[in-house]
Length: 348
Ligand SMILES: C[S@@+](CC[C@H](N)C(=O)[O-])C[C@H]1O[C@@H](n2cnc3c(N)ncnc32)[C@H](O)[C@@H]1O
Image (cartoon, rainbow, N blue to C red; front, side, top):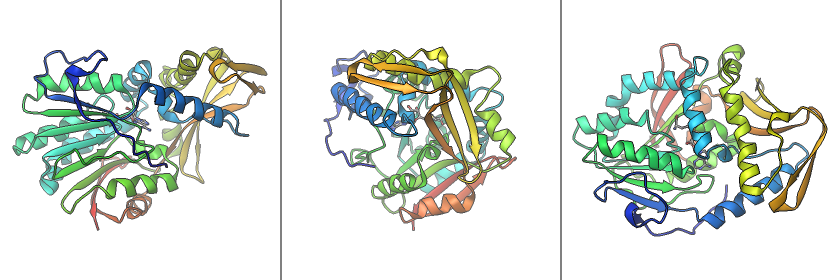
């Protein structure tokens, strides 16, 4: 995890040159773009060069999420095999009021917010207690942020939304956000980090929490391997499309010539490391050219690119990761079938 201190000033959505999806937002949408367009391209180029030069090829999962990737992820959340979203929603439906009562937040900050769909359960609970003032979704996908904000504006007329377009692989400065605050990280996205990086991430969040603030994290739990693997190998093939989308991103953004259908989606559980690994495996020997990098990448038949890790947790493992930031669990709530947990942590 690296520290990036370059930050742009907050600007109202209306003055942003990119098309704003919220037409009439009364100035209630503000945008903090912490990723310049050139930075984005340079970082993608660096990550891809580095990742595809390794003996075991790798591309970070954040590059799935262009507009198409974000839409495909939304479709995944509705799949019968993908229990994660339903289980987390069940917990939020039961516990959002209690979580909000514990923290009494005026501001909700959400990392990896995507469509902000489940978020409504927290916003509604804040509204019922007349606390709701600000929402700050933090996501690398500008398209997903803007689409979500446009929907929220209509539903929450009292709400000011600050879109934070940022990569949370480096600490994000939250000093603009008010307090008391609840920082949420839903969807088990924390599982995408290797354990050491998850600890660094938690530490960077904890550094921006005051006494009385809360950190709410969704953890997917260790369970039967068949249920885990089915969630990442759906019968309709949507996860495969989502996985392959990263190759489309590379073809478009870096002038690469991946033959997408010559790569196969692969997802399996590593019980020792308690994680799902997602890969794209080459069906044949081939050479892929990445034009912008003047790079040729050799693939043997069966050789794969690892595209995502999704770690699964026990309560003890979740406590350990929170302890990296000096946080202790205040609440641990699971769904009825104990497939998923929401942990509310506070400064210890
Ligand atoms: C697994 S989805 C979860 C979306 C939503 N929170 C949910 O629970 O359904 C991960 C989200 O995190 C965002 N994301 C992934 N890596 C990121 C990064 N390094 N920085 C910022 N956002 C990232 C993606 O764009 C996506 O919206």
